[in-house]
Amino acid sequence: MKILVIGNIASGKSTLLNSIIDLYPEFCSISIDEMRKLYSDGSVLGEEYAKQVFIDSISRNETCQIIELSGIGELATLTFERVKSDSNILIIYLRVPENIIKQRLKSRCWDIPFPLPLENIPTAIKHTSSEFSSGVIESHLKVCPQSILLSLKNETSVDIQVNTELCRLYIQNILSGNL
Image (cartoon, rainbow, N blue to C red; front, side, top):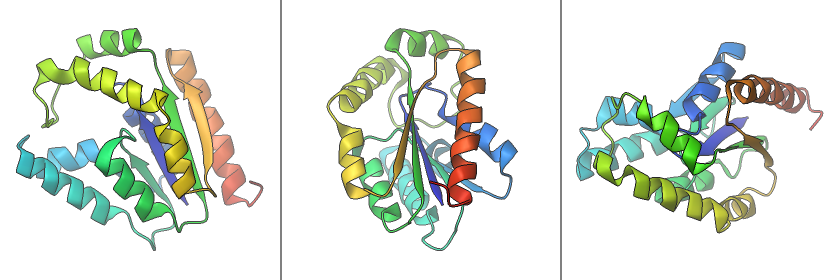
């Protein structure tokens, strides 16, 4: 089973991934931000290396992996191409309005060697929102037609709790063959 957690910057992807790992510690997690911390220095070459390690970490043999990334761009294309032969794919898309993302970023500690200067983050947020609005998820579903899409609003701490429970139910049903 592959679980892909996608969404904009500060949409709660890492929080949800960690909640799922707490429920299913046997799952392996793969996060582009973790790869950036381990393998990048924020340079173009560092970013390319972190992306390659990320893609190489997605195993065709590993049965339970949770994969976290924005869901747009070349990395998303390579990721969905890599998982397309898996029979159980759950795509979790976290929807958060830009004003809430900007609020969350005010308290964020940037300890990740991000490939963009921090002053370009607002542009990246708008670009990511635009990509989701223009149908990037639909193109992923064409690559992985056997996948299940779970599109979740993730604006409040209550949403985080509800989303964790919804994900648990979906994962349980997929693992037991009911979905």
